Image (cartoon, helix red, strand yellow):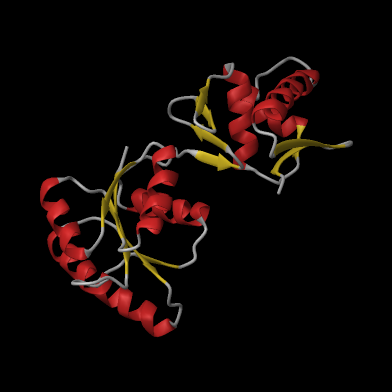
Length: 225
């Protein structure tokens, strides 16, 4: 899995990002300022850097320039500023993307994943997150509140397909074609049986994740707030 360097002088921000991406099985390395970050680059292979703009000794813009001059890795800037001139300064320095604080962890993950794919660091097969549910797609594992679970294969594939299409109503025909394949010769009740099993598991293990029935059409998965 990719190694992410988080550079921020705020320990709370470092901790939030580290905990979130560690749950997704990324390796996370932390630095409190730009000088420490450059030392880490000398010692550790880094695949992506998340860099705060406002830091002592060496600010995010200057650090971005230093990284860009020496290493071919994606850089994502974090800042409390949202003005276009600040974004322009970041892109001129060499950043690949820009996220304004306070940020949503899921959005940050999507941007990180996109940058890693763009640089060819990881495959497009990424982990999925919905509510407290984390799906480790390459390991065929489910992680819920630090518990790791294994599901029967078809239940796992059904859950992955639905989470990839969160809040979309999926017909039984769509589900069968995607999960069981076009050559499947059984009837649609198979979908209902597997949905029932998944729904029962989620009700116990991840109550914020709900599969709803849309009468006459099919099913949709959602995260309840």
